[in-house]
Length: 165
Length: 401
Image 1 (cartoon, helix red, strand yellow):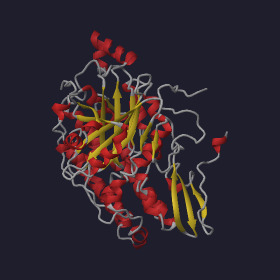
Image 2 (image 1 turned 180 degrees about the vertical axis):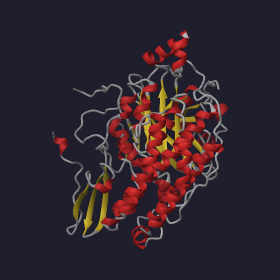
Image 3 (image 1 turned 30 degrees about the horizontal axis):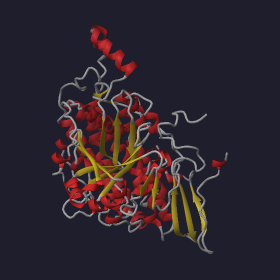
């Protein structure tokens, strides 16, 4: 099974249900798409992530009602440095979609989606703890894995694997 | 060292309430979970799980290892179902590589995964019953668990940290007498499940401690990201093995047990029924085990057989290269989810085209399941907190990673 090259053309992918509903709503909020290895990724503008999640959750025919995961990737030293990644699952249609928000290293702030899915609570706290991304509107944004007085964010690429000595 | 003081600290909100710490060394918290309770007499007013005591930075360690070196790390995440972790990681990397896995390897993976599920559920049943006060079940469950651990030892040389699956297949052919041993276990096991059920399902004390306790509705369970028996106990029909099949699960017939009320008892019934369903899958895998190779034909990624290395020059070269430099994986990202005994276990692997993963993230089913705890327990008795923690079947190694 050879790998097919990823498709990044918006026109070719607009029949995908998640993308179609997002395009109907606000084409300006979509910064890019990628269909690779049977997985759909949509890059959303950071100001619109909460509305996009609400829209996908409440879609009438094609609801992505389940939040699987929130995580982050640090692309240090390139900019925008951080990618916050949301994995959504549609229980009824057995379909997944990945939303991404790109954040630059100087102000890694994004709106929290705990109001859309309470499940995001621990996931966002983990990303805050290990990457130092701030989620505005989060009800209890404190370290979850590391001790409260820990210095630095371990999963950032400029944090040494053995820790600071 | 300021961080030796347990934080966070919460203050009681009313005059008549007090704060009680349960854990991190409490036997019923299944490891090192600390639960901060605000109690009014015996009633729980507020509850806050505090985690992170077992955080070892596995995700960070993965970034410094070759792809094949990550497999043993995945064992240590959820130490009750190491093979499920191995499978999920292997599937994710295989998807990144665009690899085709031979049928025999897939069936063996399914067979061992279902044995792992039985193993994990047996530990859960034993400890859950022990927490609630039914001591005997624990001894019964660990008797059968010993059989499964012997099977694992036979096949991989290890009882718990198996690391038996490799990227591209499995490590070795199963030894002689392996299938007979599994068949022997499969013949004995149904009557043993009947024994557990005789001890618990109709037992009035068990019913009083579990029926109607720690209830959660389907909507709340979905909103809080619960998966696995915690979600199915509330009646939501979601099982990734059936709904989004991986590793050849589409070839197997099994039922997905569902609960109705979403209480401790329904979650218990779901898992006990899953014991039987898993055994049905094990039997099907034994019946229809295909013949053929156990590793994919991709010499640059899969280690060659020992025999070939002694006779073929290329095999020796590839072996040396894979061990010393690893193998490069085409750039891209993959989210692979499997149904672990606790729910949706997902691996998000990002590759930048080198021999080391750029990022490995594990979606821990227990981390999301644990978020349901406050909703289950607030306004109930402390004794119910113990039952609720047992019923969501947490493994702290997976939560903290």
